[in-house]
Image (cartoon, rainbow, N blue to C red; front, side, top):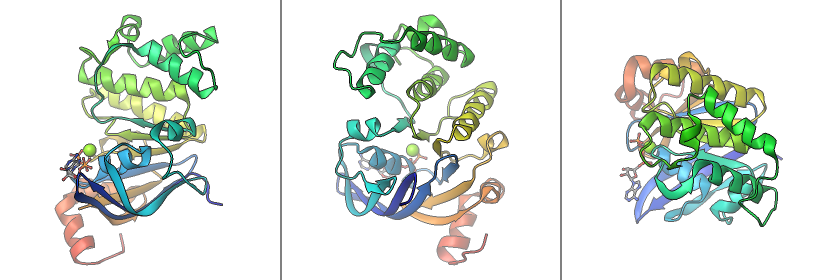
Length: 259
Ligand SMILES: Nc1ncnc2c1ncn2[C@@H]1O[C@H](COP(=O)(O)OP(=O)(O)OP(=O)(O)O)[C@@H](O)[C@H]1O
Ligand SMILES: [Mg+2]
C-alpha cells in the first residue's frame, strides 16, 4: 500500500470546462512537493479537487490517501482523514471568530458533538503562542474571520489553522502571496517543521522565492492542466532562470524528458 496522497491520471471539469487533463503525482509523508506552473495552469483546481470542493467534477482518474480512494468522500470527511488546504484567497466569514472555528474543527475531529466547548485549555494557550510567533495579535484571533484582515494576516492565519489542526497532508495554495519578506521566511520555517514532523506538504507557488528557505523534495510543473515535467529542486531553479515559456518549449513541445 502506498503511503501519503496519490493523484492518479486526474481529469477534471469545472463548470463544463476541461481544466485538468491527466495529472499524476504523489505527496509522501515527511516530504515537500512543490507544484509550480503559470497562471491558469490548473494548480488551484488540483488542490480544490483533492479537497472535494463542489463543482469540481472528476471525469477520470483517482485520488487516494494511504492507498484508499477518497473520491466518494465529502470535503468534511476528507478533512477528518487529515487533509487540510490553506486557500490562495481565503474568504471572509462574518460572524465567526478564528478561535471559534479552530476549536470547532478540533472538537469535530475528536468526535465531539459540542463544537464550542474548549476541551483542553492547553490548546488555547498553544493557539495564542503560535499566533504570536506568526506575528498575529490576540485581538485578531477574536475578530471575525478574514474581515478586514490584511493580505499577509490572512495568509498567516491560514497557516495558524494548519498548525493547530495538525493535518497529515497539508496543501498550501500560494502561501507566499501577499507576505512580506519576513513572512515568507517565517512561513517557510514552519513548512520545514511540518515536513520534519512527518507530514506531507503540497506547496503550490509560481515563484521559486520560497525555495531559498524550503528545499522541495519534488517539483511538478503543470502547464495547460497537464504535468509538463517532474523533478527535484533543480527544476525550480530552472523555472526561475528560464521561465515557463522555456519549460513549455522544451518539455511540452520538444517532448524532452531530461532535466
Ligand atoms: N469556476 C470556474 N469556472 C470556469 N473556469 C474556471 C473555474 N475555475 C477555474 N477555471 C479555469 O481553469 C483554469 C485553471 O484555473 P486555476 O485557478 O486552477 O489556475 P492556477 O494554476 O491556480 O492559476 P493561478 O496561478 O493564477 O492561481 C483557468 O483557465 C480558469 O479560468
Ligand atoms: Mg491558483
